Image 1 (cartoon, rainbow, N blue to C red):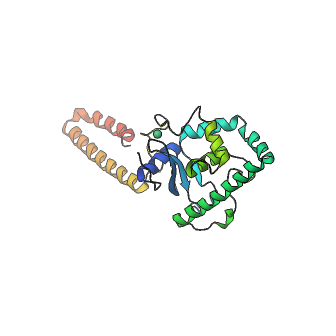
Image 2: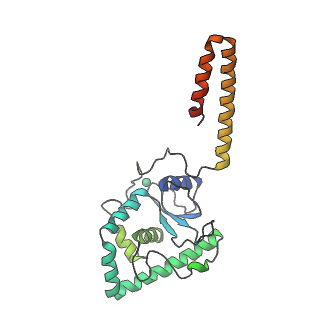
Image 3: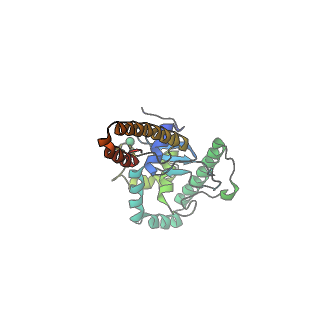
Length: 234
Ligand SMILES: [Zn+2]
């Protein structure tokens, strides 16, 4: 079995940043993983380090999964779900329970992250819960993190995307660019690398200049090298 732990490793955080194409911040747990171990869901602190309350605790990060859910939404499933919620008391009750479970999980994450209580979003979950369905991404993220039989409509949405994504098949290959520079590249490391590159480049140019001075005919060559170095420094 591949990684089961919910505690995000640096590799998980890097992967999430690449999946999202932007820096991954305030991630407390990996809510769910692909069968291969890659993150599917980032469990995020209820208050971001910027201070902003963040109700979307279970955030889908995997591009294949995210776009599959978008396709499902585009198909109009949410309208049908909303209708059923007004007619089916049993479903409505189970959905309300899912909302309660979501809030309890978020409290746990808030505590775990050190953020604590977030009064601005107290009692407010996400995705339209507890009475409506407004975002299937939220429900799928919740279902994947909580496991089956917690969020009935999240479970249904997962079944609904089976054509494009299922939990037992890895669809990571080619879903994001693993070679891409990290969107959240640590600034100090970047600067350090940059300085090193500059120092080496200066050394190289000094050497070229010395060679050029030693041979007056090569003067033009050094000039060219200096031009090219601008693009080559990175
Ligand atoms: Zn995978």
